[in-house]
Amino acid sequence: MAGADLNVSRRALLGAACLAPVLSAAAPFGHDGLAPASTRSWEIGSAPADQKNARRAERWAAALAAFRAAEGAMRAGRSASDARFDRLSDRYYAATRRLLRAPAPDIAALARKLELAIDEEVFTLSGGEACLAAMRRDARRLARRQG
Image 1 (spheres, rainbow, N blue to C red):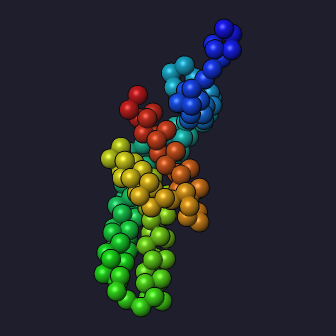
Image 2 (cartoon, helix red, strand yellow):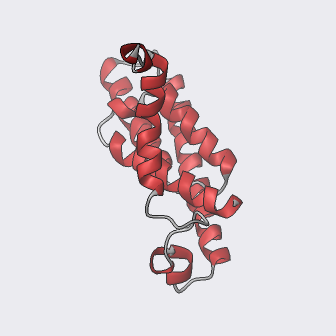
Image 3 (cartoon, rainbow, N blue to C red):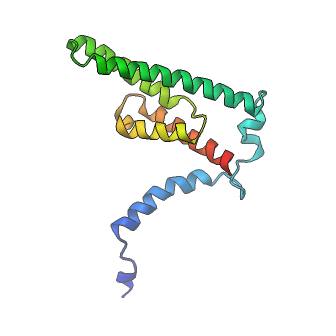
């Protein structure tokens, strides 16, 4: 009977494996979900939060425009020579990485980043780890702002 009590389903095991990093990441935060005052970046910086948000929005808009241009060029160049298409593809993936590393100014931008990361399997790209780390920072920052 004791063996049956310890029988864990694959779904439960997968759920625990996915939840563990989230819980460990939340451990440094206090009961209110905020990092200790010494690590709150919006209090440490010299620029007010509104200026930081404006810079994030500008950086996001520039990265998104570059991504869309690279995406359009790659689509238009599908029938180009292999060498030209390789160059267009390299530019597209560089623009993708820049966009994914740019701070998301809002939840909608973060959702776009997640869609792009999944569609392009960013974890397989060179520099993909930095993109995923940036999205993690976005999620935490935007969650603090919502709460």
